[in-house]
Image 1: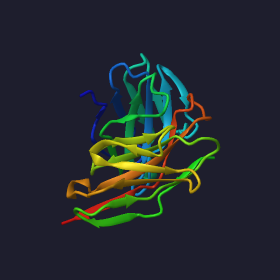
Image 2: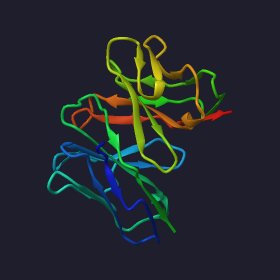
Image 3: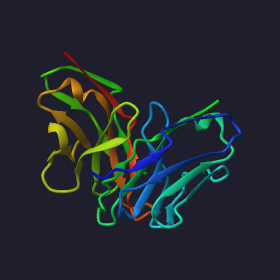
Length: 115
Length: 117
């Protein structure tokens, strides 16, 4: 069964350092999402791509976060500099162009701890 | 703005008993509703969705959910709980009118289900 891949699974960094997360969606899925899940809360959308284009980054803290999906396949989310409040689970999800009703498939996530 | 509320942080149930995890929503227009489950240190897994049609929706692992428009609820149910059902459950609503082609999900805060022997 096809799955969304993410790496690393865990990342510990010190504040002010740069971190990057990678996501490989299910093959053929045109839409890719990055969510942030703070402990005890539901996931919150950070950025959504349709192919290589950003279609929603309204909740992305653009002063420190950036995301790209250069060839419309895999994607990278970067934080620079990391802050203590960035400690969270970062989830990547994908959906096919045809599933217009929001069924998204999630990867295992990257748990970030900022010290 | 759309929103989802899960009023219970935790639900405890004995194995073999029926379970209900509650969800209420607030949207403009017709709601598109979803349930996801999350096991420790894992991503979310899709359980079921309501788009239109029958108010009782059946999903994975024996779960079902009942859509009630008058009460704006979408409660998750299972006739007989298993210990392996213990996990974190999220209700979500789709944003039809937002950026990104209307495919953004807004999640509730989650309900921890604990099934005991």
